[in-house]
Length: 299
Image (tube, rainbow, N blue to C red; front, side):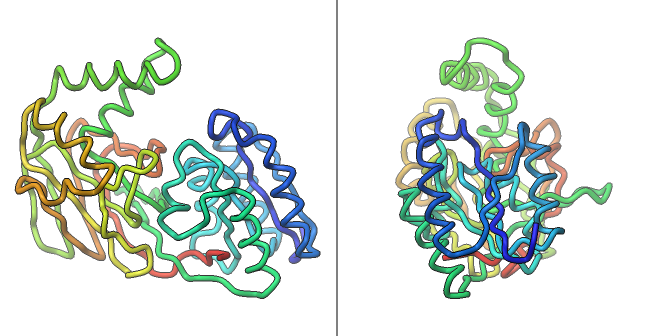
């Protein structure tokens, strides 16, 4: 890897394989910059992160993630806080980070924009969220961290072996609805205590998660702040009515929903495993910090 190379991390199964044939076109557009393009080899999430770290350490001019939010999440661990360009080509089931930072929805159009930014030497400074645990471990995320009902559904679905496909997620929702109950959250925002009892909490750098659900509709990934949404206790029927409003972002007008903004967030709740960018992070006992301009987005 040289300082001129473009390192490409691609997930061939992203979008359930719908975009696999687009990869050739994406690589061709990136090659139009005149720089060598290297497709990183990775067969797992950990291998993807290792390959991205190696590319950055080797002096790559840019790392480009071709896939969904999971692919972006892996690449962010290597580029966060580093003087390297970062390109995003949305080609996944969920492309919430790409949408949040203003990338075109089309993969080839996004690749053209990334190539143009590289050719002209331009980039846009974008914030990231840094999650830290008491043992010193750190993870970065670009879109939204879920720490409520949706996190419980994700965790249950990941532990289930059957059924396969979307039906597993649907079953996980039903099982978690059956045991729905308010939880006590310790929440500190820029040093002020906002602890509450409820069943929904999300912390985000961008507006949406889950493939377009606008959980934090006014989040701005370049304002130096994290948006935080919490919801007071409500029953199963109220939750069912609230969920469709997430797609439009109108849930924030519900009197049981409160939105905050903060630079630093401390969040803790027993029995919850947090998910960010759709990826499993770990137990919800986290220090979350917005790091302004943590990534050089090629746009």
